[in-house]
Image 1 (cartoon, rainbow, N blue to C red):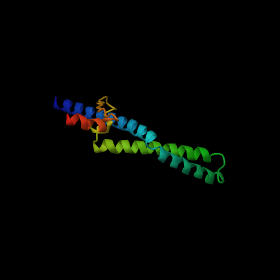
Image 2 (cartoon, one colour):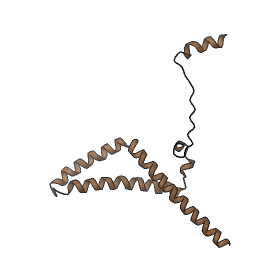
Image 3 (tube, rainbow, N blue to C red):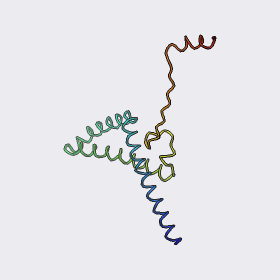
Image 4 (cartoon, rainbow, N blue to C red):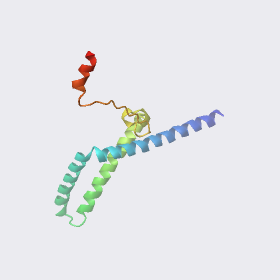
Length: 126
């Protein structure tokens, strides 16, 4: 009985780690696409320069080689980051800025009116 329970717990831990890895992969991909635009621009610039240099050596396949290397580098960065976060034991549910990911969006807005600095003092004096 105890052996079956231990195997079940290990299986659940494995599935939780896989789920965490997939969520981290998705989140890091989205963040890299949105926030990492300047990094992507630099990578494309370096890729174009590498293609120009390699064009003298291998004219046909230089674009394919550099393009696939840049895509592989981006995928590798995301997967290594997701694996590192998963292996450290950081769960996506524990991260505060990922509340939008698991549906806990609590939006609290305080209304601030443009005339408040002028009228707030009048309301306090009454």
